[in-house]
Length: 89
Figure 1 (cartoon, rainbow, N blue to C red):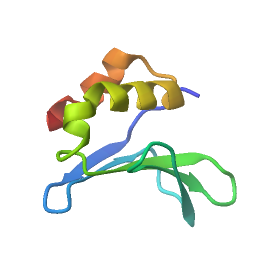
Figure 2 (tube, one colour):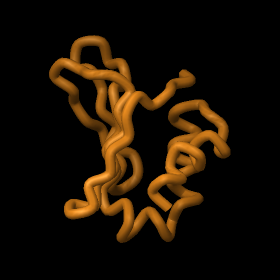
Figure 3 (tube, rainbow, N blue to C red):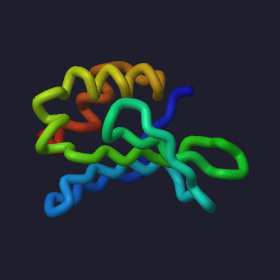
């Protein structure tokens, strides 16, 4: 699966990064690495977004791990993942 983010929001006060691919009815979440939740449409099991907890506190210093996880799950190049996240460096 190769997918493109429609919207990326970072909420500093909660240290949450939301990556949305499309709106979903009744999304359900599945955690991969600690603090990375993949949101899926309940009825179709299509990926609608990703929620990343502790983005600044934890993932900023583990950016390579985050890039590798997003790269492998989204099937997009590591440079594209880094570009997607660059605004939050």
